[in-house]
Length: 202
Image (cartoon, rainbow, N blue to C red; front, side):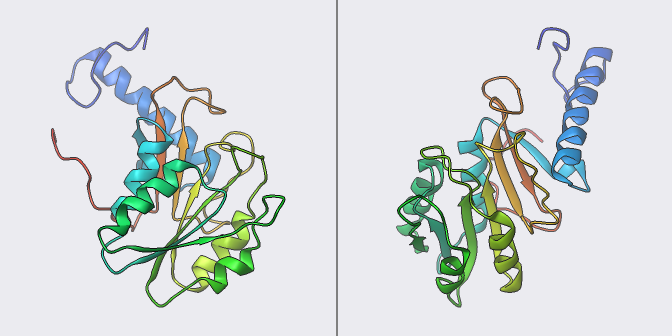
């Protein structure tokens, strides 16, 4: 912000090109960190809430069913609850008394119209970890999309989107990735198209 004071992608002068290169470098670094093949599948957002809303509302339509857990942040639960009025059905899978999720309970909640599974990677309340590799395997087995909220773990725990069968990965930039406030990240699998929430510019 101090040394690249230009608008990337909006001009062709030296500072704008330098800014665009720096942003692409950030995409490449994130792609390496999460084992993403194409850096252009990394989207920059305002924060994890923005990323989660984009992913959830970009995928779910009237008649769809979504599965999530009792350990989710409001950034997951509230967008899903808001979609109920638009005909989206949801199931909240309960975790045990210590805050751990049994992946088998997720599989039991699957219905014919289940489109998406959303889980946190780590609870921001009690710190319990979700076995995202097991949940990702279940999602893949049933042809269901899997969104992971990595707000507490991105940059701390190893996350491999291919090995863990993660279709979308959301996170803030300002926590363990050491980015500035007001930044977020969303990875979207290359062949997955989301509905656009905002239009403008190019």
